[in-house]
Length: 145
Image 1: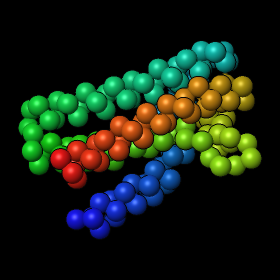
Image 2 (image 1 turned 135 degrees about the vertical axis):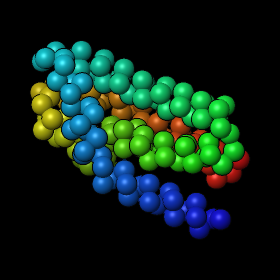
Image 3 (image 1 turned 90 degrees about the horizontal axis):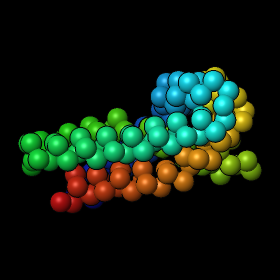
Image 4 (image 1 turned 180 degrees about the horizontal axis):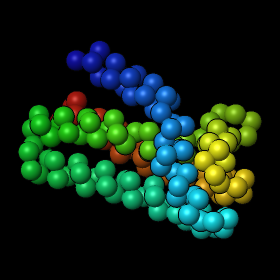
């Protein structure tokens, strides 16, 4: 069982790395473009997007557990993790000399200004830890409970 858990975690890390730029361009980019040049609005919309994702994840998880329970709920939660992990890890800080460099670069490619990209990355970056906690809790639900 330990090999299955470790293998699944490694697969999800690889999935997240492979899909992070896609998630930035397809999910976060349109939200930042809605700010139309206003830096403060880009940051606020980014935070709202991230928190909405967290709440939606928890809501679907709770509904799956309440309606089907057991193994079926665990399968639903595992699929939910697959869908949500790239979104949850979008603003994860990198270890470069310039924090959030990859995220900011992706946002600029998606149509944000440099200031909007910086504000959005810094506003949502700390929320990544909440996303990691939710994903970790979901893994515990699937493999431990």
